[in-house]
Image (cartoon, rainbow, N blue to C red; front, top):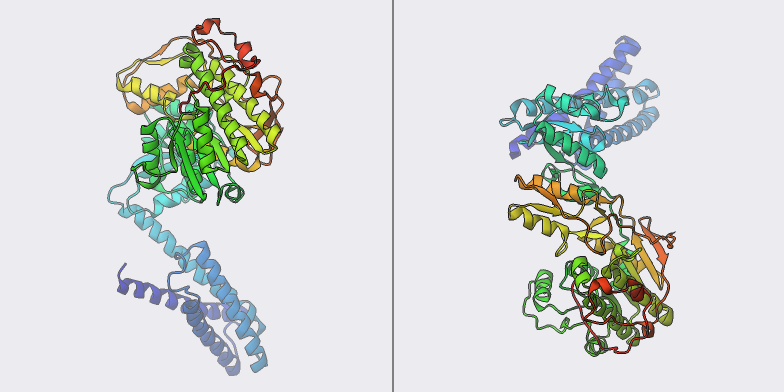
Length: 607
């Protein structure tokens, strides 16, 4: 907007508010006195209005009312306008009561209210006319869209579409599951039916897209609406969950196609950063497995909390290089804070702890692929058990105050080598917590979307290759979370966990793997088939977060549950024989091992 246009708008606003005082005076005198006043009373009334107009103009500029403090006709602007009118009526009322004994009380109490109503009415007419003008003058009307959800999110969306110069969608109406809203109009758009009428209303109104304006929609609702849209040939667009928006406000460019992450349907994690910062800020923090998906994201979040030093440890030099590059853009790998080390090597690990003296340790190093560990169980034993014991022993010996062991939901009622080894790691952590009295604890969560080697990677690779996509069983389900959520949980554990705890995230409802596969196939736009291969050795049809003998207890965080695991002394460990095939391994021996004879066996991978 040019300076001349701005000046013209300000002049019109000041002029309209001045006219409002005059019209209010005329209306009051007509109704109250039928315009029959004495000459003295006319003089007082005119003087009052003149003073009000002057104060209105001066006060409007002083408070920035006429300088663009708020959008014209917005709630904030009308509120500021009301405060100014009240202030004027109080000041002038007091002054005229003192100076003019014949002053009419009606002028002081009724006329300001009339003036305010006239001012507000003018602004309302401006907003309505401007909105209609925008709709008429849209050069390229957006895609016709039916909005599912007439709540706060839907109303925000309608406001954005109406105020946008080039909206991507043209709203044809709303549907909502609440029958009480059947006559509601959202900025002039009618609620045309219930959610069950979605397809029929869309066809009747010529809609080409459905915008799901429910920020906390369940995965079941998302999948159901997606299936109905796909069948009817409608594009599904979703308003992102609150965790993806700034201050809960919708922006048109944040609307996106329904994706796999929407299947999680879980409440966002609210993290108390101040409490976490107390545990991290100014401390020396070590992250094992820092080159992995979880370890690298954890390093990024820890760094944001301003530690005195952040040490990244991994066996994979390429993975370490990638993490270092993502943190500071420096890929030289010449810093003492980047450590190439194998947690299977106890002496090397202890040398790192002695030299760098970490105060907080996040242990993310692990071997995690279930089928591979079923084939090579001794490798899982060396890394997940012996490697974890090495890190715990070196941490305890060197005075580490906080130790967070990253575990998995497969440790609950474990049926696989992965689950059994991670269960032992939890028990070892609990034993060291008991011995040191320090905050040594474990964090247990499910599958991580987007982590290296996750089901998403597998499915996308199969889709890129032309299929088929392989799923073990049509009923198999898993708990899922995103990488940032997983790392926030780990950080939260460092703040609220007690020695020996195992903390478990409330991960909502489990998601069917076949639903994830279908969603990815739809996103690819390819005609890909799904093949069912059957459950693999050690694999469950449905995962659980707690073992049958575990009883969860609430914590200070509403989405985190605490359970206790029996302690396991390191001297009671017994490694498996390397040459034994997985079908001959007694998993009960893994959970109840015999004394260890070779304490230097070692290994490591990335979670």
